[in-house]
Length: 290
Image 1 (cartoon, rainbow, N blue to C red):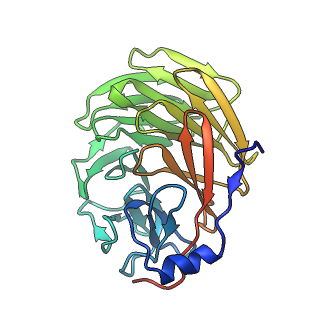
Image 2: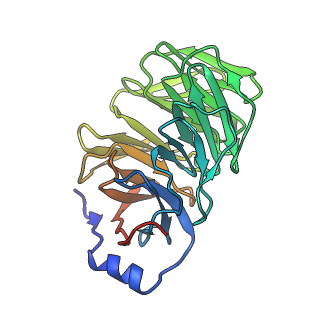
């Protein structure tokens, strides 16, 4: 571990956050171990997970400002308000958010739909069953990959790119429709012309991208490492993580990510300046739902 190290949240911060009535902007959200949504309050580095949003909804997945319940119904969170059901056909199997938390894409079999600001758009049939999905921050572009190929689509159905690449586990759309990045046996970049650049030293299971597209985060939960790639300098940095992380979620400031275990028992933020990493453990405010 390098000299920056990890900034551990003290248990006393939990009581302070609750008793002093700390308030601030909602930086993002996280599912807790009981599958309820907790808003992340305050700036990166000193944020805390507040009490769960009101309502009796237990979710099986959450990304950005959207989540799915056990029946595949889509829900939307805004600030600290009660979760709101999104009017869609339901039965969705996967939801994936973008660096802008108000946008997400949902999928069932070969059908997908983009949701913006709590409203879902028309359903599109991709003609493939995605294993990985991503959506641009403005919702104008969708990336999808099945077992043998990946591509880019507009929500209206126009396909902009298709290329053969097998075993893709995670995708992100680059800003300004510049292409996509993904994880298979190695990390790769593909531009709009289909030109591909691959990196042999960056395996992982989850992928994050800063809002400006300058920095890529590769999460390797198996080896308990995170790797950061600067697209401009082509430099890599690597640090260990203190727990078996399985999820990486972009937050509203565009350069901070929520790194968490699948069950939500351990939650950290990772803030980036280039390839420099600053970690902070997130305390929980004790108490039930509001």
